Image (cartoon, rainbow, N blue to C red; front, top):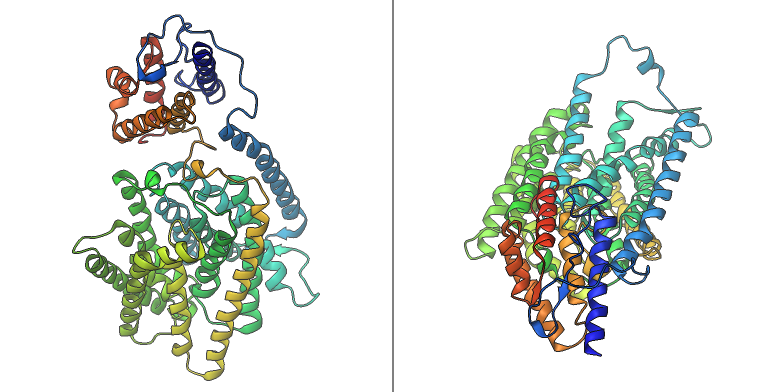
Length: 549
């Protein structure tokens, strides 16, 4: 019986690795016809932790049944629905642009060309979204592809329909609507603002939702964002030049509401924490956001454009000083990279609603200092409270960078306006934005929860939906540990592989044949020489394509 069980589990391991080579293009430097068996030799799992030779092992078995490996179920179950959803969305967008959109006369018959300052603002905001937000979210060491790739895709998914919604909600006066939605630089900037709002929400659910769920969130949040913006500006008359309420507050608390509705339980975050390289990449995003944030707040500044830009610079500079100061105080003289990456930007968020209202520069310094302080304290204490008492996992800490500073910004705008009637409008817009984002976020979270979600063990990892080299190693580890699913030996073997893998993963040691054999050998698993060579070739190719992990 023991010999039969061993042979059966060897076949399971072999099937898993064959599945990797065939479906993921593994172990052949990009040649999808490659095979890991190296001429008939295969991985052998050794009962009791005693090494044996891999020669003479059973030949490869047919591919496993669809339900053999749960991780595969998630990947396959999401591919077609995502492609169909994205395809239908894009078909609808193309039809809508043909039927309902046009260039206005001043664009078609322009004699002066584009306003250079407007195009500069457009470029700066693009950089903030596609580079700033994208790289800021690369801190997860196994989710870099998702952070950058999904930022690119989902931002564009929001950018195209937003100008149409903009026309339908804001340009239409009752039933008196223009025959076509005007598409110009202003509507494109508005589309970028919609994308920024959804990117804030993305930060809250980062690594915890499938690409299909993320696509649905983006498609449903965009019209709610436009609706709230239309109500606040057109019906209430709020002053919010930098979007403290309509962008930052809305995106943050919409995201937290979705997080609240997501399936509870998180993976072991210590396995997915940042490392030095990924923190450095995230810092690139911070620097780009920091540099261009004055353009974000000043793009719609009008006659007070310069004041909005300078006030933002003073505020975001002050929040940076405060972030370093508070980070040192709460960490016994050391700095926390999380605080430096995020709380330094809080001044830009907090000044969004009053960037063109503050007529004395000292107030911008005070507001930025307060925002940076609150943000650091949020990362240090409030995030843990949200997780403990509300079971809200806020991956990027959007509550601390966007949520609380946005509330500060809204309240500052109430004090900054000169008449009581406008102050009432500012407060009303704050309440309305809160109500719409919370209720719409809960509703969208409910819908998203109806879709197939991620297994907890697959959260914060790229390899489910990306061709990432890390996924091959994780799948090999699963195949090995499948030999001992329940007994004490299995747990010991899994711990052995896990600890050794973690020690070698941040380095390139596993690209060396002897080191790689040692990795499995100390755990009682032996690979043939040709198997090792083929796997090293894949690792080398994966490092060239994806790097790092």
